[in-house]
Length: 296
Image (cartoon, rainbow, N blue to C red; front, side, top):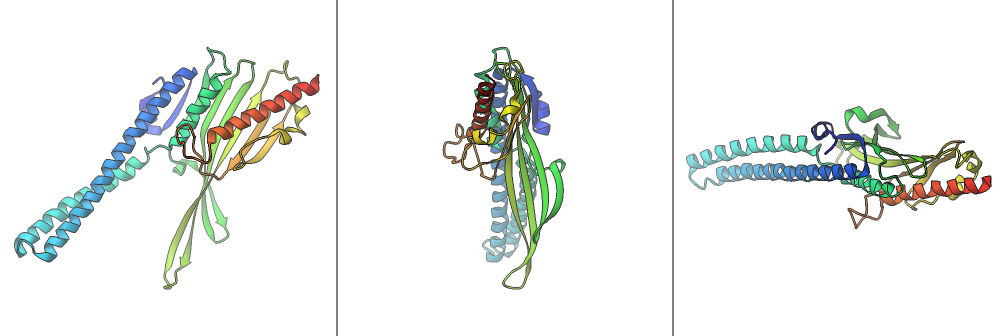
């Protein structure tokens, strides 16, 4: 792995610049790391469940006095002690390890985009990437607090992917993926009269694609400012948040609350994030072509 894998294991942030082949090889290392993390989590879950059973067995032996009162009490102490140590160890390791259970869709989207972008790039071209695979609700990603009706809301903004490179025609591209998460909570009185804390999570993904072509090929992109919205074609489960054209740059911003995945790695998904970003590139290139045609 060309990037610092040791650093990645600590921070879960992959940042480098290199050719597509290097980035694709690095993604395979990230997949391997994720599989190992998932296997460890299964061990901690098994240890936790086994410990609960051991405690339950000790209680049963004590109540039933299956081996006589004294020996059953000794068995109870042994099972509860062993189960208690295992339970605490399992829970601690489970909680710590859950941070390293990576969101597959993030690195799979990154891999799919690199494969797509490399087709229209020079062979010696490089791609700059910053891929953040840490949990979206880490403290450093907190962006504010507030109210939404009766709900107390904690807001998180997670800019987890940034890509930058240049196509063979000289056009510079930028891609950004941002997850916005709301952790909502409020007190609610149950039918029995007890107050309970109710929680829920709301999340949305914002995708941003920018194209900056050579001015000689496209002398004034702003001429399509009034048409760019009509040229956008994206999946029906997303909506356009912004579409702008300045003299030197086209920008398209979309948002979706759908729980998307990447069909290349998850054939069952109804919402393909790669399809979304691919359609955004296609829409902006349509705008480029219209700009060039209107300049003729």
